[in-house]
Image (cartoon, rainbow, N blue to C red; front, side, top):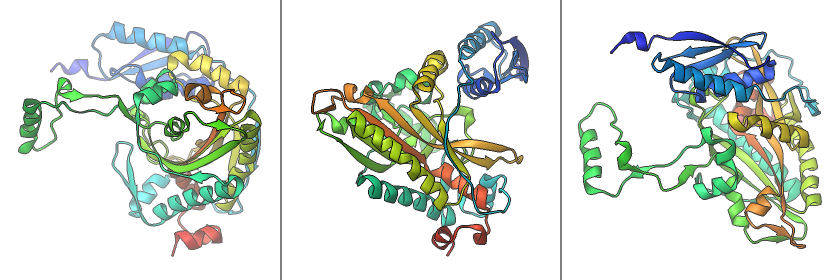
Length: 403
């Protein structure tokens, strides 16, 4: 092998226009999906240029052309929208934030990181995750009498297509494949792995994909179950959802997982009903944050869409103010504060009502909305803000987590 082809190299490239820190952050995060030959793209501090860090020098012109096209569409994003803050809680705990919680939990044996966006946990971490989920479910039951349920982790591609996910977030989809129903192909796979030291994957033509995917958003499996329903007012549903989003090299401990849990609330019905539920959800999130005694704020936000549609979809979300994000500060391994998104409150308009034949009693497509709480990120945030000393934790939480 020619090692010169795989030695990392950096290539400077001018930005199509100067970008601010918000757009620069989106560019750097989404750059892992530009090309297998690119390790990352780093935007300069002044936002006028970028550095393309290459893992492979082969087909350099084609790779750089792809990087230039990516930067061109990402730079079209309009940022600097007015951010509205709906509430901000302040913790009573006066102790310092705990840095590098991921490593601290691993050292204590409470967390095992498999290294590919999957984690196992036990002890106080497991108890805290369960308490966050149970407390949120309790609030939804109290406020809305929400129906508790369960939905599968697999979702078919037709549902994802109807939900618009392939158009908005194609890079995050995980398809499920199985061995083709062929005696020789299956035997070849079996024999290759019977005495091998490591796993041998089957060739691509021996793997069949029948359209099943790992669910990338907790709310999606609910909508097919509502097909044909007619609402005079509305209804709320809640459950713990298993969610899978492919994050490539952006995976990082509890901060950004491939597989995680979400306490979901979906509300469907008339426009007045959905708006009312959404408005009443804001103080519920505030109550949840206060129960765990954490710094937290709820503000307007936009989603990280795929590059070619990002500018248009972010503009629409910001203009309509349909997404509110729960931001909670944590510290990374270097002690830098980052406000991570630990959940969101969303309005969908009549999009899912039209796609899944859900109506009000007048025949109009029903409105929907949802609240999603990322359980593992809440765990990270609570340990960051209270550390490992039980005495710093609020009593109602401490007695359930540390016994």
